[in-house]
Length: 144
Image 1 (cartoon, rainbow, N blue to C red):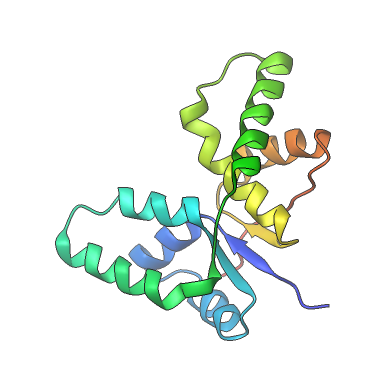
Image 2: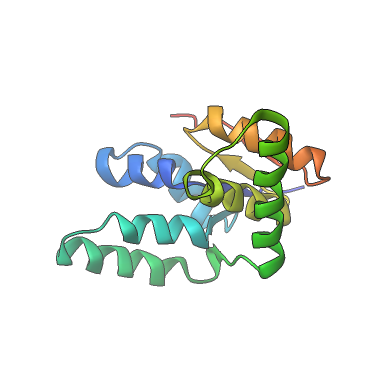
């Protein structure tokens, strides 16, 4: 069985700024086993402040095409429920600080992919909560 991968913004930012993970990204893009959640693309656009960078990002977005995964209303509902469960068990968090991470994890789970992130600490928290809600997600730290 072919292993599918979903990357979060930490991986793409490290690639765009420092050239990290190039082998992993291009190898799996060419094999069509690498996907990008819509929220990651949104996070990248939010960080673009120069027109040249925006054009580069637009070119990347167009090149990715069907490798960009959409979120559904059901995904948003599950993310909200996940934050509510966390709040009931551990105390209040600010949804705006976590909602995109949860949506990224849900998107990976939806396609049965491994989520690759530099942000393992936070993602492990949401993996645990999603698991309690019946939505399993696999996590890995990046290699390289």
